[in-house]
Amino acid sequence: MENNHEVKHVRRVRYKGTHPKKFSEKYKEQNPEKYADTIEKVISKGSTPAGMHISIMVQEILDFLQIKPGQKGLDATLGYGGHSTEMLKCLQGEGHLYALDVDPIEIVKTKERLAARGFGPEILTIKQINFANIDEVAAEAGKFDFILADLGVSSMQIDNPERGFTYKAEGPLDLRLNPEKGESAAERLAHMDYEEIVGMLVENSDEPYAEEIADEIMKQKRRGGIKTTTDLREVIERALKFLPAKEQKEGVKKACARTFQALRIDVNSEFEVLYSFLEKLPDVMAPGGRAAILTFHSGEDRLVKKAFKDCQKTGIFSEVSKDVIRPSAEECSRNPRAKSTKMRWAIRAEE
Image 1 (cartoon, one colour):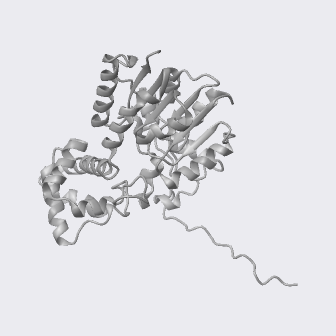
Image 2: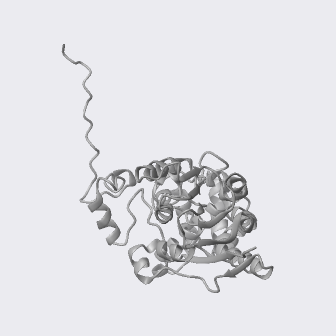
């Protein structure tokens, strides 16, 4: 019998020029297992492949955590799963790793990715939970021998225009790590007044042009609002028109990065979440347990430094890093997104 229900072949959309520019066109980069050569080429040029994330300071983290088979650990910020993969290798099939993430989109992909590498529920438990709630995880799992928190936003979140994390591509101004909860960045801006916007820009990203940008945001709100990433970028461009012509491009670029960072921190209550995590951290660490935290801007680093020093003074931590540890020049060259990273560590006192 003739089959009248043949599946129609759909050709992939062709992109203009020799290289794909849009996130949706970079199908090879989004299939690392299938197109390993493409991935290596992109990384060797100092870029991060679309839909992927290159883990930062992996060796420095492993050197400090000193993971041994049979131990229990926590990756408080699972992301793409690169750090978790290396920590799981150290366990050599003995012990257990718990991993947390709030992102409902990426957590599913990462779970599949790690399962394909042979890390199933017998050695790995993944939970969609904010790392501010580590006490809830410890109540079920017990205390941890090693803990990692990488406070950076994953590249696959930044690069996907649909998530609204980047000013470099058109997309909804969202910026939520969990797009199923809370207000988007566009909704937050709609409710904020001039003073609140200035405060947010100064506190969350040390923005030197906070007043000028806030003033232009208020004007745009009266004109019809800010809905997309492009809307906000154009607001910043107008706000910095007073800069000398030769400083315009670089000035706008940096102000955009700082403004989007400030909004992301605000929308996701990142400082409050970090404060809660740091407050609960000592109580979920086993005696002699080790914790490493990667920060990406001065506000985060100040909070971590103070919390660690306070716990050392009271004898809860036997030792903390005296100075920040930074990624090597070689790593920063291979992965420019590593440049602003600072690592601090702490060791729980033996009881």
